[in-house]
Length: 283
Image (spheres, rainbow, N blue to C red):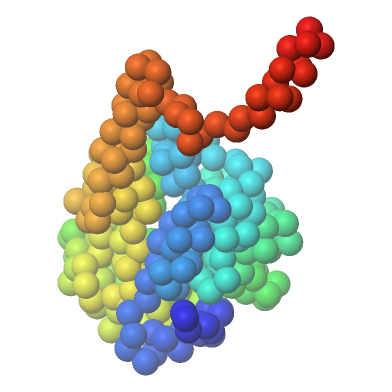
């Protein structure tokens, strides 16, 4: 019998990191995969705006709307009993004003039962993080490669590879912590820069493409499962190739239907001979 796990909360996440235990984090966009990830003991499920690329077919995360995020967040939450659920603030849902940021973050908690939100940006977002914190909304910061700034960054490029930009990342992490963020996500930065941030932080530091010197790791679930084929980031490890498995299943289905092998007797209901005879007599 599976042992009942204690529900993950923001304080539990911070306590686990303080004990030196690694934090496990995945993106999640739907009920079936959320259910499986939760059963596996993943600590944090992020309903990421990466849903735009992995599930909705957009070229970037920029077109994703709050309504789309709420829709997917609701589905994820229905599958979760253990993990901390975080809603990812989509582009232009928090940048225009602090009031709009508070309103949209509140939607995640009120409408989708999320337990925290994530937003991109460092020093420039500190006041927004502070306002959310003061409203009672836990915030995870996100610095380094910030996909919503892809046009300014010139693409999906590693950040912090020189002293000046690396120093800015340390300043960003410190500003987010001081503003009340409960954790910070580092994306696509050099491992030794992440190590410096980790050593100076008093909150959990989670990496995605930031090396091993973090309190925990995040992967995009579609990368982990081999379900996203457009490109594979250097930092992503494929633990399964479900695209191949699913493709074969579809091909087998096509072949059996065309050959008349499916459905077979085991997939059908029948009617007794006497009842069939009565039916035909009625015709």
